Amino acid sequence: MSITNPDHHHEPPITNPNSDSISAENGLSSLTISEGKNGIENGGGETIEVYGRPTSPSSSGYAGERGTSSSSSISNDDDDDDDDDNNEIQEVVIDDSLPAATWMPGKRHVDEDDASMSWRKRKKHFFILSHSGKPIFSRYGDEHKLAGFSATLQAIISFVENGGDRVKLVRAGKHQVVFLVKGPIYLVCISCTEDPYESLRGQLELIYGQMLVILTKSINRCFEKNPKFDMTPLLGGTDVVFSSLIHSFSWNPATFLHAYTCLPLSYATRQAAGAVLQDVADSGVLFAILMCRHKVVSLVGAQKASLHPDDMLLLANFVMSSESFRTSECFSPICLPRYNPMAFLYTYVHYFDGDTYLMLLTTSSDAFYHLKECRIRIENVLLKSNVLSEIQRSMLEGGMRVEDLPADPVPRSGYASPLVSHSKLPTDSSENLRESCSSFGGPAGLWHFIYRSIYLDQFISSEFSPPICTAKQQKRLFRAYQKMYASMHDKGIGPHKTQFRRDENYVLLCWVTPDFEFYAAFDPLADKPVGIYESYNRPDPIMSLQQPARPRLRANF
Image 1 (cartoon, helix red, strand yellow):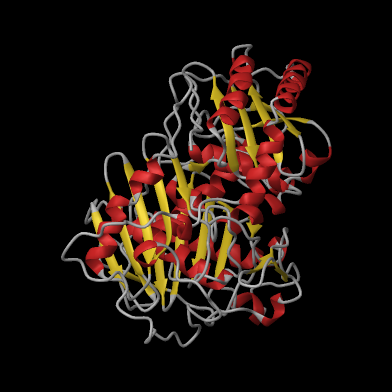
Image 2 (spheres, one colour):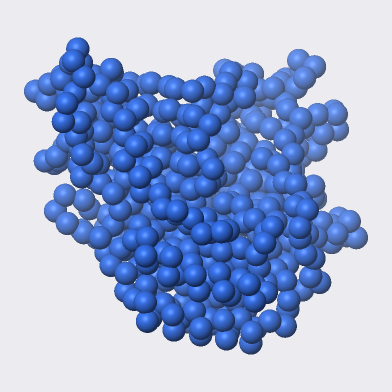
C-alpha cells in the first residue's frame, strides 16, 4: 500500500493534533521467513532464533453488533471464546434465529502485562512503539507495563536493520509476528488467527493511518529533534478510536476491500441529499459527506478533489468512536493521509440523530460559522424532503438478503440440481453450520455474497442470515473472504480471474473482472457448475441497484 500526494492539495498550518488520518509508505524490503522454524532467515541465509515464544493463546474475545455483512459485527477475535471475556460481552437476542452480541468499546484488560498468562493467551495483539523502544499503544494491557516487551520488539527490528535488511514477518510455531516500519514509528502484530500475512500487514497500515488522522505525518519531525520523544500524551484518550478500528477488522469488508458501502435508498431520496450537498461544495467546502453509521448516504467533493475509501473508513471510525462528536457540533483538525499526510484539514461534524451525521471538510481554520450555516441549510432541506426519515426507515429494514434474490426460472439443461441432498450434512466438531437454522439461503444454495464495483470504489453485501446464524460463523466466513481476497490479489502468483474452493463449511467462489469483484459463499453440498452459473448471472440484478451519478457524486448503490 503506497501513498502519493495528489496534484491538488492544501497545506493549512499544523495545529495541536486532535483528529485522524491515514498514511502509508511504499513496501518494505523483505526478510524471508523459513517455514517450520522458530526463527528468521535473512537474505543471506542466516537464521535468527526467536526466544521466549508465548504459549498458545485462546482468545482476544470481543463481540459486535448485528447488521449487514458490511456492518454486521463479528464476535470474538478468534474461533474460541475466553471465559474471562464473558463479563465484557452482553448477548442481545434480536430474534429467535439470529442472536447478536454488543461490543463494548475501549481498552481491554489494562491490568495485564507480558508476564500474565491471560495476556499471552490473547490470539491477536497490536503494538505501536517508537524507534527508541518506547511503547505508544497496545491492544491489551498497560503500555507502561509492556516497556520491556516493546524494547524486545525494537531490538529485533534494529538487529535486522543493522544487517542491511528489514524484517517483515516472523513465524514462530502457530504465531505470525508481522512488522511494519514507518520511519520512527514501528507497528507490530502478533497473531495466531490464521489470517494471511497480507491481511495483517494491511491492518497495521490502517492502524498507522488512524494515528496519522490524529497527528499527521509531521510527527516525524519531533523524533528528528529528539529521538527519545514520547508521543503517548498526544494520543491521550484515543484508545477507544484504535480499539474500534481493530474491532472492525473482524466484521467490516471495507478494511480489506479498500472500498466503502452505501445505505440503500431510493434514487429520488439520494438525489435530494446530493443536490443540497453539491450546493454546499460549490460554496467552498472541500468535501461534504452525509453518513449513517459507517454507510455513506451521499458524498460530494470539490472539483479535482478525491477522497480515498481508506480515508473514508478512518474518518468515519474516528467520528463514530469519539463521544464528543455526538453531544455537540464540533470543529476539529483532522488529516486525510491519502489526500495529504503532512497537513490538517478542518472538519465540522454534526449528528442529526443517533445514527446520521454530517461531515464538512475545509482547508480554512476560520470556517466554523460558515460551515454551521451550511449545516442549517442542509438540515432544513433534509427535513423538508423527508431524507432523514427515509434514512431511518432504511436502517430498520436492513440490506439485501440472499433469500429475496430471484431464482433462475429456467435452469440450463444439463445442470444438476443445485443441492445434492440435505439428508447428510457435513459435521463440524466445533459447530454445525446448520444447527438451529430453518432456512438454507438463496438460489442454488447461495448463503452470502459481496460485490465490489472497481470503478466506484464501492461494495454491497447481503445481510447475514441462516444458516450463517451466529457471530462465530460470521467471523469464520469473513476470514475466508479475507484469505480469498489475498489469494486473488497475490502479485507473486496472480492476479487471478476466478477461484473456486470447497471445504466442510461452504463453497467459496470469487470472480474478478476489470469492472467488479464478486465473492460468494454457497452451501457446501452445492453443485459446482450450478454455483458458477448462479454467480455469473447474479451480478446482473446487483448491478441494477446502481443509480445514475451526479457529477462528482460517488454514492450510487
